[in-house]
Image: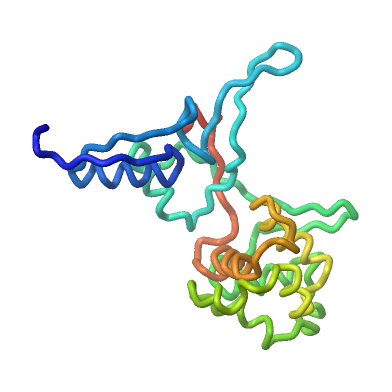
Length: 223
């Protein structure tokens, strides 16, 4: 009507809100469409009534605001420059039912010392385990270049790849099944390329360390 460019963004999740924000900042008129009565996608929250009649907030499940999530954190800074909506965690220990426990507290932040520091302190991944791995096959974990990594590993499952590099079974459960379960995929169904990419992002792709922040309040209040 007034000569201003207009566009539509479908989906009010993280990606949709980020796209809408960037377009508006560049002078576009944006219509944002979301089928749910709330925004946020994986950072959404909504009220729900428990069996005893009390009302609580249900969150979608996005819990870890890692410090290498630069784009997401910059988006949140539009409304909260100091990210006061987030609370830093000192640790998030991984606890195995059999008693093994791994901690990320005190691990160096700079690659590759963070991965080596985790190995040194780990109950489930020892230096002896490292010595028994097949280094040539494991190089894909150290040198990741998308989309090339998909040409190299996408034909394998995460389970097949970890078996091929002789990754220790105890550490596999704690260090890698966390990734596959967060994507609602069993290791035998998750792409080895996705596994290698996630390993690189979280362990070797930045100097931000392996700790993260959580929302200081329920998502509808904090975000």
